[in-house]
Image (cartoon, rainbow, N blue to C red; front, side, top):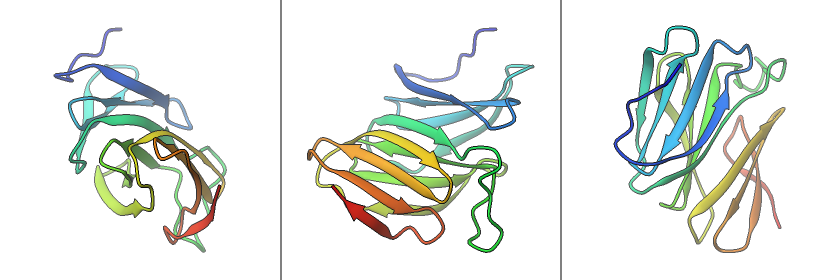
Amino acid sequence: LTLEGHSREVNSVDWSPEGSQLASASYDKTAIVWDSISGEQVATLKGHTDWLRGVAWMQKGDSDPETGVGSSMLVTASDDKTLIVWDGATGQPLQQLRGHDGGVNAVAWKGDQIVSGAGDKSVIVWDAGTGQQVSKL
């Protein structure tokens, strides 16, 4: 299966928790959610103003109705110094995380926390439910 749809290089990919979808992040400033069986585009995520460097789905079993964190959520990291949390089911942005002084190069999601690393040599741990910084390393 070959997935084609980005107009620039793809930098990062990640499986959805249940494996039925893939997300890809690209220098074309978009992420695409794909059906992993048919190869069809489910959603194109637009909202960043610079290259995307990373994408990560929330892991299965990490959803928490109390905080609003759900298992269909994903996050993208960009050279625009921000991260965007998306609803993977609708493709709608839920919140934008700001706190880095350089392009965000790496992102991971575990439980109710997102962690990001950037060109400003910092690592930030975020509360996924509130979007607030938990710590900056």
